[in-house]
Image (tube, rainbow, N blue to C red; front, side, top):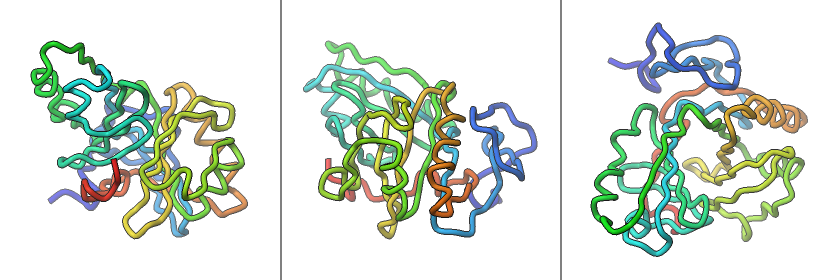
Length: 227
């Protein structure tokens, strides 16, 4: 039987750009933190999640298959979080090791006249999750985007400067409605952004919570986020 949160093995074959807080464990081949937060405001290094960038013509058949417009995020029927990260560009986030299961060859086959490309960015980008009702106040210290409910609701996705770093921000609230944001940046800047969030969140009692599934990408019905 796998332990709670997924398989944990003894040998690491991948490492995040964010140094794991002790205790250090291995999860799905990744060296991660095994820390467990006790408070309600947390940050988690989510680098082990599968991260694929897909590009296809705007308004084409492949774009229709994804079904998520620029600036929005929603789960598909398989539980993959599909993010409209740019015009004709999508970011797919899934459980660790699932890149080959996302069916991109099948999508491209449905649009043979279109140029559909994808790149596995799992090891080339950093990803972290900021969860807790203090999240908007902490992000407001580091970025200039209006985080009010009517401007950036659950399911919003945007690219902006966070702590002077180009960052994709995806609001992906937890089951029960707790505010939660995914922050996606270049791998080389991952530790910097993680540390910046810790400093900004110190006054709100932020804690590091180790990576585990499904908490890193909670299950939600595909219809729960408007597209």
